[in-house]
Image (cartoon, rainbow, N blue to C red; front, side):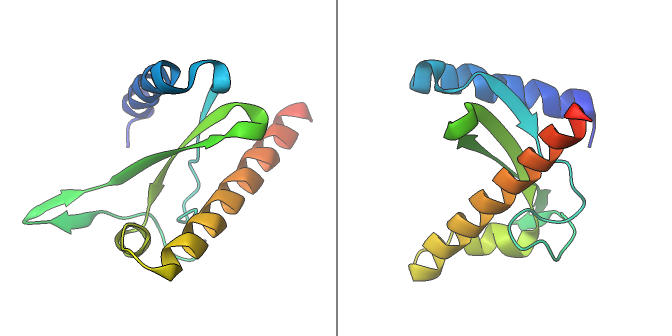
Length: 112
């Protein structure tokens, strides 16, 4: 995926989040790992909606660091995470923890 395209989408998300959350979001970062940030097992891939391929672009506000984190999911996790049920809460919790860990690792790499 084109980095400029992703940056533009994240800027749009940032603008919208600013309207909703005010100063809760000060920075944006995009998770660009090869593996899905939810399962950490599968590569990010497209899911099929009807006959069309689609990517699951999402964002999470890491409130402790006032950062909007954008990310894609693999097709399996995208399907599971938007389903209803008890598993849903656990999936979100794991996803958020994985994204926080990835962002903190990124910050440490930038400080070196």
